[in-house]
Length: 142
Image (tube, rainbow, N blue to C red):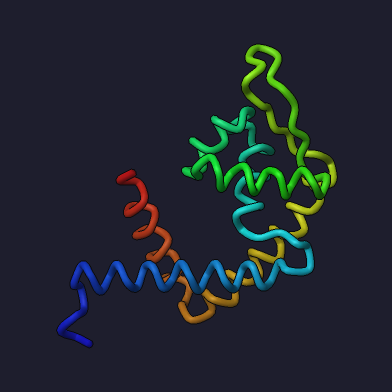
């Protein structure tokens, strides 16, 4: 394994596996709420005011139109978001989080944090800070 340590392909696979593991744990933890990370990402972006239209939402989250439409349809059907025609452009839709969406997002957020805290138990305090700093630097290249 030491021969592969630092190899870009090996690092890429480790990042991918870490993502899969974190996502699966978070989704499993929040299962009682019916929310997954993809739902939480949309609800969070709406709550933070990062987007109002579906088009802005997709751009802000890096989600393609068909995937975003499926997520918003699901959230709307559950009463967690409200979709309406944009007053300035009848072809566009605006999306807003509902009170129930806010409540469920808060509940799921606590469960997501708990799942991540469990995963991070493998690292001590300074290692967690170092991982955070390294990942922040890594994604800042975007």
